[in-house]
Length: 298
Image (tube, rainbow, N blue to C red; front, side, top):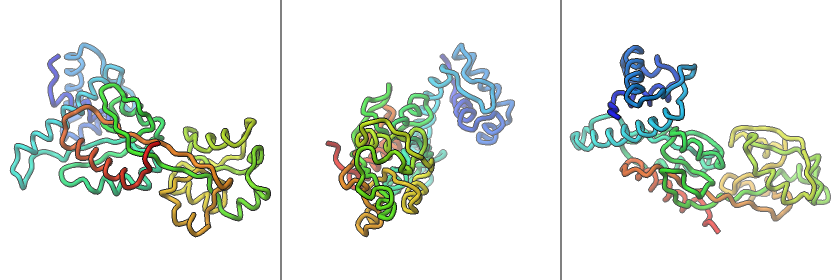
């Protein structure tokens, strides 16, 4: 296949922006030029790469070429900067798309990424840690913080550590709903906070503490900050990370509802196998941040 850099960049722009018009604005060309480049790329590949829908979507073949396009664009940009003057590097900053679970994003990831200096922009995709590998597989991201230790094809994986969660509520909530303590079977009518329908942490706690299946009343709060606030306001109990609740637990304004249960969620860093200084710099910063913030994986 004879794939041209401008064609690959057009594919990346179309699938990132969702329309030919938005891709044209991003690359400062006309929509017709984008259409011509995509057509030429499809002819070179010998197959359809994008579905002309709104938004534009990649076909299975398109996802394979998209991964190549983003790898080539990253390496080409790094070469341009290396060839530029030391104080005026050529080309755009490297753009590193990363999938991050909400609690890591809320607590330790941004301080870790702040250690990365010069020539790198982050595109953060929030996704549950159990599902971030999907974004690696389809080429949406180059790296992910994930709960999956098995590497995605074409990726390498490194352990980061574990986030510890506790089943927390306010003291008033715990006294009202668990006057005799949180015992097996006592959770059935107790309001629960859940992040979204992918969030399994509360259910893991329920399966461990209740012998029979139950269906408690549930508030869905799809924001890490608002989730914690809902627990603090007494709307329900929820599994909250120690990193987010240290002050409240020390002050007694949040308590472990059964006094003992903990869930440690191991986290891993997966990234494309690509000799990219920018991607490796991000990996190093994430690794250093994890050493400070996370518990060792046992």
